[in-house]
Amino acid sequence: MIASDVVYLQAESVDEAVTAWHEYAESGRAVRYFSGGTEIVTGARHRDDVDVLIDVKRIPELTRVPGGGARPLTDTLFVGAAARLSDLADQEAVPLLAAAARGVADRTARNSITFGGNLCSVLPYRETALPLLLFDATLVLASLDGLRGVPARECFRRRLQLRPGELVVGADLPAVARETGYSARRTRDPRVDYPLVTLCMACLGGSVRFAVAGAYGYPVRSLEAEQVLAAAAREEPRARAERAVAAIEDRLWDDFRGSAAYRRELLLLVLAEGLSRLEDA
Ligand SMILES: Cc1cc2nc3c(=O)[nH]c(=O)nc-3n(C[C@H](O)[C@H](O)[C@H](O)COP(=O)(O)OP(=O)(O)OC[C@H]3O[C@@H](n4cnc5c(N)ncnc54)[C@H](O)[C@@H]3O)c2cc1C
Image (cartoon, rainbow, N blue to C red; front, top):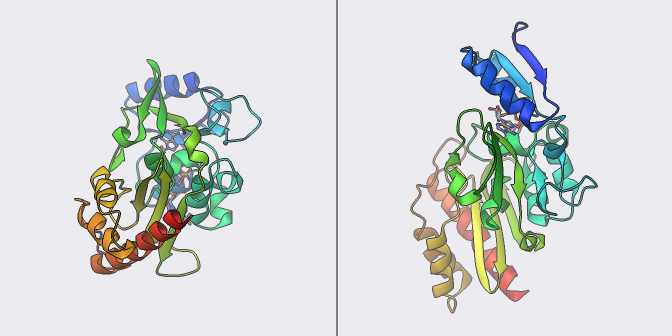
């Protein structure tokens, strides 16, 4: 449970949220943005210190989903940070984002978990980051200095790199994010489980791109691996997948859910399958 003396504030605008964050932080209090709240509430049970919660779900820009009726902030494929994963799973404008959202938890949890919360999670999966990395999306961040746009691949160095008090407003995806692409998710338990591997893949202008969660301790997209795939274009999918995975410098994750060798094998299987599907299409 969250302690009863925590200050809870519902912000109505980006400015109000960011200003409040700084005012409370300057008085020495531990301030957090509160979106779906699932991770914050779990953390509070484990005695994570928090004095002030700033709920961002009423801020109109933050609740926008692609193809939704509200006026876009910057682009027709803008996704607001407080969009619920259940709404992202149901939208059709960005199929790979819908697929990533559908993979997370179950429908009941997705009715609470938000896009921004998933991107900022302390857990290693952050599956909705995959389409952002794949399509070179721009993250829209708000601070006291106003809004700034940062390429997702710059902002995601293992974790989302936010300045103190910075609010994720959402992400702008380019029009190519309407591509269907290919996605696959492999878990230990077939019902609801964290991923051993989640793959998000598309063929854009003849070049294959892919991003992976679960196999490493954070979401990964490797341009080197994509170059290797392109250079080995004449080889069989399995051989190309092996070369590409060998080119990824990050260390495969090894824990009680699955060994590094098992995750690697699953990654090779889905990557080879994705290559076959995309290139036969
Ligand atoms: C049952 C269950 C199953 C799950 N399974 C998966 C899974 O399979 N794959 C996966 O990727 N994740 C999974 N998760 C993890 C989940 O995506 C994260 O815990 C996520 O943080 C929860 O989102 P939330 O909106 O509830 O976040 P909150 O609890 O509201 O916030 C989480 C963190 O993000 C910060 N934050 C939230 N919004 C913003 C913002 N706009 N700007 C700046 N900071 C912000 C908060 O301050 C806090 O630090 C699962 C969670 C649950 C409960």
